[in-house]
Amino acid sequence: MSVRRLAPDNVQPTSFEWSKSSLGKVAFWLGKYPEGRQRSAVIPLLWLAQKQEGWVSKPALEAIAEQLSMPYMRVYEVVTFYTMFHLAPVGKHHLQVCGTTPCMLRGSGELIKICKNRIGEHHHVTADGLLSWEEMECLGACTNAPVVMVHDYYHEDLDPASFEKLIDDLAADKEVQPVSAIGRQKSAPIGGPTTLQDSKLYDGSLAKKIKIPNLPPKG
Image 1 (cartoon, helix red, strand yellow):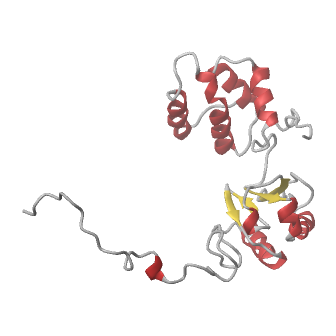
Image 2 (tube, rainbow, N blue to C red; image 1 turned 120 degrees about the horizontal axis):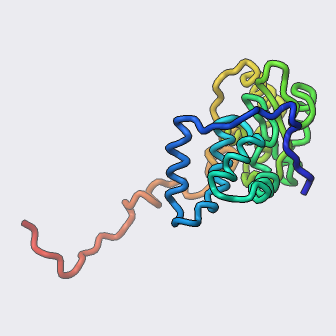
Image 3 (cartoon, rainbow, N blue to C red; image 1 turned 30 degrees about the vertical axis):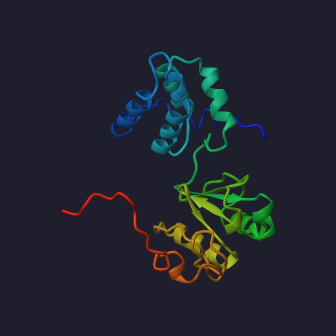
């Protein structure tokens, strides 16, 4: 695993506070664990901090460590271990491009080239603050490769043209819908299902009617 470090001090905010909307979620997670076991909520709280701020800052780590009565270093170890946490500011629309073997075999290398040409190197944020990207390990949707995750949702079966269109929409700050670029239904075969196409096979119409013994009389 590559070394992961916090953003430099000149990027760090001076403080961190939970927003009103986050406070209720924090209380929910703390309430899930018995008294004295609140440290178990460290990952959910780090995730909430990222959802609130877009990334996890050093002041957020310090606040979470204090709230959970944990040594700061323990929280630091968690946040630097899991790549789902951003340790520096990212764009409003952060693209996570899967570069593992199934996606690479189906063209994610071309998608990575597009990211470098249009956005810049890994974790670079465009001047308008809208776009950034990174290459990820397996996102677990190999059937629909290549896959790119934006805002926690998957955009699947991409090719250079459909990916360029996705970046165009994000660069224009448009809302995008997570879909298969080829209209595939989830992980169904390309072109649609090839088996069990007769609805009679599963709608119950072919089932043999039986009489259940010892039913109570009607009425």
